[in-house]
Length: 385
Figure (tube, rainbow, N blue to C red):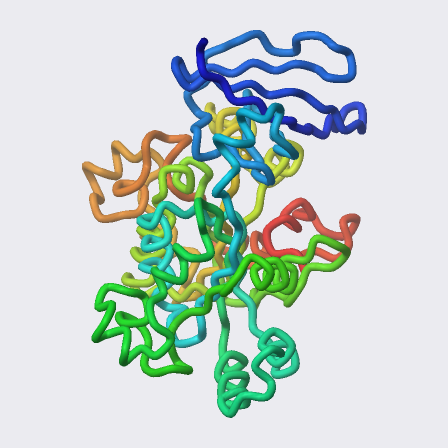
């Protein structure tokens, strides 16, 4: 019998303002998908080859794109899929501490190399109280005050990691708590490479599934609220979006490393998904101007993106030049060291979006509080407060 995996999926239909539920079937043999409308008890999508969906994308809690529809995977469709795909899947909290934030590209690459997936990420600056609350279990320890002081001394990057036995795998990537010990016993670990001692040790990882659940809720609350605020400054900046194809191809770490190594400062960072309406409005300036407009919209809402606030001297102009020509083929001929030359596929899947007009740099990373008073209100999905 041919192997297939079944998932329960939900899709919000904006035209009808309804949440629709489907059974999504994935056939790895020929990389095809099928969808069944559960309410109306009929086939919604006949079995069709779809190479943009990969086995590693299929886990409960993920959002996948199937023919321009963003589906939330809310459960397993049968016991076989649950046993095969879900038995070892875990979520854990990874935090890059202030001393290693500039190494975010290297660290995310280490995460990918360990076969873990980054499903949520946010740069934030904790207050002393927030840091104390996060480390409350260490309150009676002698190192507590120094730890809280250090973690609240600068920005940190919080991430939700997903993968087989993610808790233990991430802790192995981190290495021993004391960076000095790590350099002796685990020379290639994160703390050995980027840490200084037992407090300034580059990163944090949950020590159990229970701790992971609590710590993830702290940074990425499932109830009302947004957790600690992001670090966006909204001044003297420009916007960069790492596109979905680059994230799915595990290029995020390499792109971030290229950005920082070329003198640009990342002052805010957040992962998000965009619905079609927001994607169309965000890219509206290209409508009627760029022939690939519809394809650009399809790409932007095809999966998770990562938004960056970039600071540098004359940031919009300098960063746009660093991104290179829109067409990666032209970029590879004329400016082979630019981001699009290195990481782009074609004019649509060209690695990154960047602000084109200098006056739009702040606009594209701003959070607009009043939709009615801002011509660019749809960018609220970038860095929401």
